[in-house]
Image (cartoon, rainbow, N blue to C red; front, side):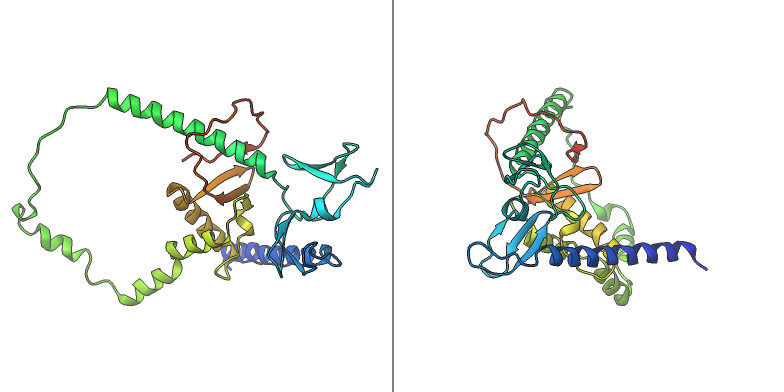
Length: 260
């Protein structure tokens, strides 16, 4: 009996069940609610964020449909929780299944602060390297023919690979495919990496490959990523070079930008 294999299979089964449970829960809480613009049906796209299936309008169902149980006031999102606009009492959203929602404007400010620190660190490292730079070393171009048998040895490393093995490796992980898949689902506001639909049936492996893909996309400045506890938030990259953001943003426990 392979206990490790059984453990992974159980974890995958639990993850699949969890995904089905989330989908069922969202379907239940959206029953009886319609789009305020065209009266179309609604579907959840992330925590406390839904989209009209007819006109594509996106909005926060907690703000639109829920009211304060104490005074009937309208809830507003402040950083990570909802509070009544009138009495200030906390409103527990029924449109959140697992993680906490995230205020869009707050997230933008935090990401801007993170980018500012990265630019400062980059400039400091650049200045340090400039001070320690050595003189240019003159050298002749490398002649591979100068070493007998070197070219033949290098060519042998890339020949004789079984084509079936190459096809199998290609089917295992296609970075370009995952990058295009992620770019097709991200928004201007942050969404949970786990909220992006899986490509393959193995959800655990798919989540790992999605994470690898967003790391490469973040390096290419195609997306912005941020970690909050065990949650990876992903949003479309927005170039804000030259903008002056306030340095008086209060730090919130558990919010840590991913270091590049």
